[in-house]
Each structure stands twice: as structure tokens, then as C-alpha cells.
Amino acid sequence: MIKHCMLIVAIAGLLYAVPASIAQDNGANSDQQSEHMGGPGRGHMDPAQRTKMLTKHLNLNSDQQAKVLDILKSSQSQMESLRSDSSASQEDRHSKMMEIHKGTDDQIRAVLDPNQQKKWDEMQSKRGQRMEHRQGQAPPDSDQQPK
Image (tube, rainbow, N blue to C red; front, side, top):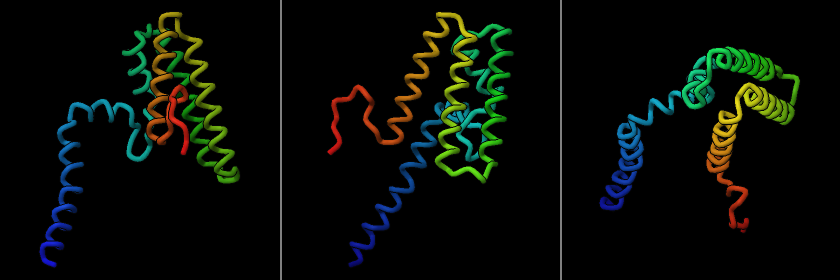
């Protein structure tokens, strides 16, 4: 009985210690992760941070940076208004958020030159794959069938 209790305590300790040590070991990744977070509990970058990230990845010129920043600020404003609208159902809000995301992505893509658009499309594809992975879905080109 005591051995059983000690085993449970040891397992519980590992469950707590391993994720904490992994988080510490991934210190280099924490900058990248915080780059994608707009603050506690948000999960989205603030428009200025996202513009900075896109400038780095897509080599945006100053004119493009200004346009992208305006697009992202507008999107953020629309999202905040939508989140505060308690009259709409959660399903309707989600649908509208998806429309805002798509519109924002399309507007940003329109600001880019052909080489930047190619990089943008790759970034969007990777983002979609990460989202599918987080939701536990198989990628669209996967041979996995639901069981």
C-alpha cells in the first residue's frame, strides 16, 4: 500500500516537473511564442507586433508596413466589437470572426508583391496546418481516415 502511494506521488511529481522543465529548456522558443501572443489569454499579436513580424518575414517596405498596420488595426477593432456583442450567438460570432480573418488575410495579400505573396501563401498554409494539428485533425492531404 505504501509502495502504491509512493508510486502515485512519484508519477504526480513527474507530471508536474517534466512540463515545467521543458518550458524552461525551451527558453529560446519563448520569445517566438510570446511574439505570437498579444497578452495574457489572447492568443493574437497586437497589430504593431504582427506588422513587425510580417515586415521581418516578408521584407515589407515602409508603405506596405503602414497599409498592413491599418488593415490589422481595423481587423482588431472589428474583432473587439464582435466579442463585446452579446446579442449574437457564439456560432454567429465565430462565423463572423472567420469572415474578418479571411478579409484581413485577403487585404494583406493584396498589398504584397508577387514574391511576398508566395511567402504569404506559404505562411498561411503552415498556419492552417498548425491549427489543424492543435485541433487534432488530420491534414486535408492525409491518408488517415476517421475510425
